[in-house]
View 1 (tube, chains in turn orange, cyan, purple, yellow):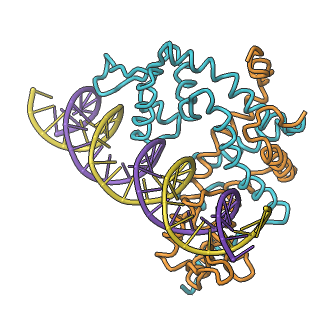
View 2: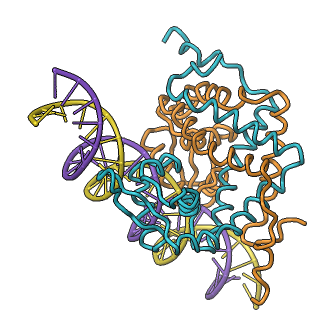
View 3: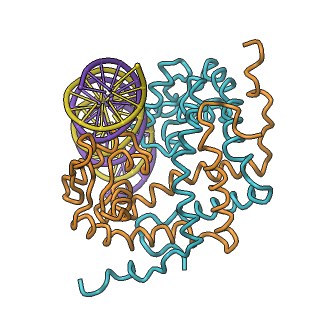
Length: 167
Length: 167
DNA sequence: CGTGAATCGTTTACCACGCAACTATTGCGA
DNA sequence: TCGCAATAGTTGCGTGGTAAACGATTCACG
């Protein structure tokens, strides 16, 4: 504890262009999410509901274990329980106990769920395209992918380890 | 139901590279926010608290009207009221009624608030730098700014107007 | 086998936010 | 100047998230 918190003080500040990048990002993400949510709202699905249906529909048998689904959705177990409650109430998803492991419940997309997803898909597609993709200059699509892949890869391991990010 | 919902169907799907960009973004943003929040947690401030203090400290007299602050924070009036409750309780912010308009309350950053902000600043700076900026290739910083400025500009007007986004 | 650790899902606080209703105040127009 | 719409902030309520505690089940290992 004699060392002055290792490296917190010695970080080189953001340059003007770096600061601009960070601010543009931070100020936009919230609004963007709100817009995507609002675009999807007329379909009767929230963005969260939509993602559940997407993941389930992409599964070969249209079902997933709760744990796996929660992981994909970046949701806590209890959060997924609540989110599924809504989808089950609307008839878009069924809860089915696994026959091989009596601890696990599988979420299964219903016909109603597939119908709702099919109806929401073009709306969401148009939303993403108009709000984001169409705003990008030709070369920026790849830059976009490159940037967030790089950020994501740095996020995987270094949670509270602090400095062991890379070199 | 004869017409295929006007224009939802006619949207051109995402290409492989466009889809990759969208997925990389969508899957990363949540984790990134969690990481920034976790990095800042040891300072005793949430990201939301931090932003309040930043905005107040940037004001010439260290104070702002609730409405203006809520707008900057992209928060509802009630949301700001409650967020300030916490900061006031911790002594980082004072509520002071305006002397020119008795409807308005001004949030004022206290010495304690400036101290907490000064302590949190290098932590947050290091967080943003390590999580984001240092991950970017040289030319990508400007691409980052360009991308989110473009997205933000498209968000400003077109809320539920649907298609009047641009051309 | 059998027992203790690990896993799975839910329930129970608790917290943060938005919406709508409400009070107080201001400002505009007849 | 009177009255009414608009504005500012707070509060009650519903929603949706997490963390922690809990029961049920499975797994690993002696």
